[in-house]
Length: 51
Figure 1 (cartoon, rainbow, N blue to C red):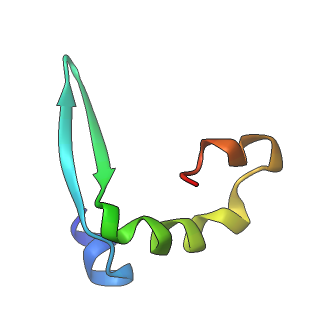
Figure 2: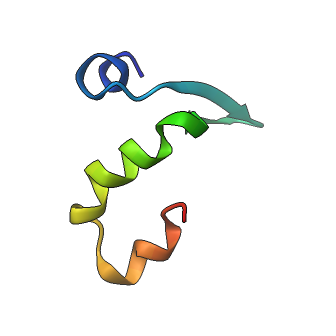
């Protein structure tokens, strides 16, 4: 999370769901995150990215 913030200016929080931890991207950083990762996501999995 600190690397996301420092290198790409993406704000995130840590969320615990039962025994699993997940990094949640802040609403204001979703577009930035998407623009960075979209070129590397397989076409069949792009539906998983936020609209």
